[in-house]
Image (cartoon, rainbow, N blue to C red; front, side, top):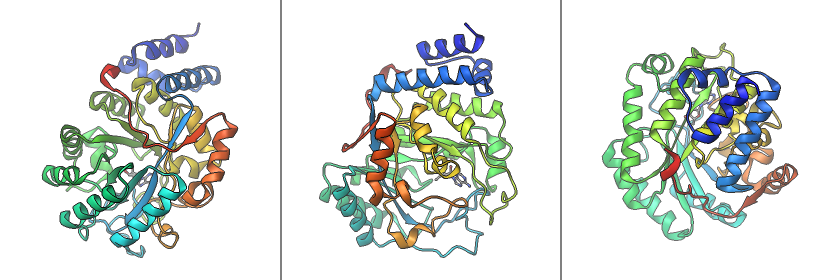
Length: 353
Ligand code: 5AD
């Protein structure tokens, strides 16, 4: 048995490895070892979630943002963005359409937009939960105070997505302006967890200045946080950002990391992200075959989709669009998986530690 196989077996059994061992696996590009890794991560996912694929209807409620993250196309300094925010009625209309299509989770995602103050948001949350009482509601609206997070939770929000982006302070500082910090980001995540949300975190693969060592820190941070969800996708440069000329992350590295995260956190909900589908036409299927179990089609009104360009060429049509759910179902059926109508909550997490 090769050294890689030994490490993969140990990770499969214990759901943890030492830093230098994780590093070896992250850097592995031995095709046979990777096939073995993917077969183990698929098995692990099947033990937790069978062959089911959970879908989430992603509603991009606003592309206005007070932040200026160097990698993001809708950063404050990009004056070429046509800014919008959906009205609460538009958002509820998206949910209605999504419900008809079979979605039982709605994700409200947006920039850090002061237009949606806490009162407006809480009203919206409670209205959606009242109208769709069998659905889960996920928020992905950035960093807020603990009090605000508590208010949204009390209003009925079930889950919160906030990628940590990078666990390392110095690296964080190279991706974000001075007013943002890894420390605050992490604090938000621990607050959200304590309040009772199912929390999602994650990072970009191949972001500028990222090294394998830094990725190990990300994996260990995730292991410590024990999030219910982990979203990772390749970094893709946006031409109107300071990182326009940087190289993007690769499909291969992202797939390896999906598999490693699956084995580190067997019960995590892991999406095959839009970014993965954007860099390769079979990206999402390959994400599923590497151990992912969630897909988040776009449920935003069609006329705003082109305005939510966090990176170049972001997909929002084809199987990426909620209204093409049949295409997605076919894609998944071809590789032996089935899209299900379900809230798709995380399963028991106690023994993940
Ligand atoms: N490439 C890939 N992912 C990006 N994100 C933001 N900008 C980019 C980019 N250029 C990711 C961030 C953010 C999520 C909503 O999208 O990780 O948390």
